[in-house]
Length: 142
Image 1 (cartoon, one colour):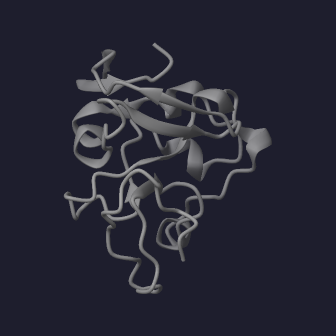
Image 2 (image 1 turned 60 degrees about the vertical axis):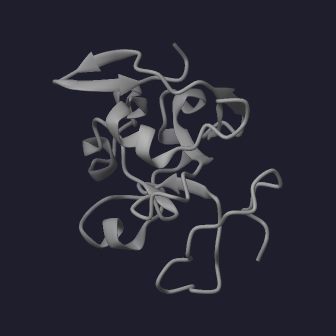
Image 3 (image 1 turned 180 degrees about the vertical axis):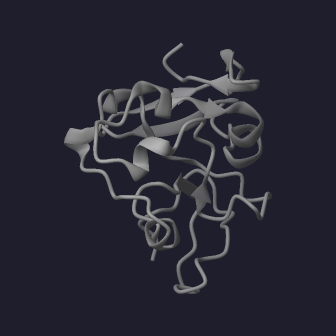
């Protein structure tokens, strides 16, 4: 399957344990339909539940050299909204910088391509944009 492979990079990370034939060089947000998370109470939120879908990162260029990145990333500062039935607040869009710097790959002129929940994609330099609850955060819109 070549659907989720960046044409500018041919290095791939191994597939999921249930799909060993699947390999990619993108990483997707673990809160978007991961069965393991759903089994422990997280919900698959419909797009209408997101207050700011243009700020929620769904997919990014993966750092395939970091095997812990695999095809999933878990870098959200506040994931509690994914266990509730209310709206997903903007705070859930803020990403832990120390995690994304390991998981995302700025392979396009020192920038990483990100795909957002409103289906737009953009290229960003990975840099700290603030702090929250003792964590350095990355907010692509800043």
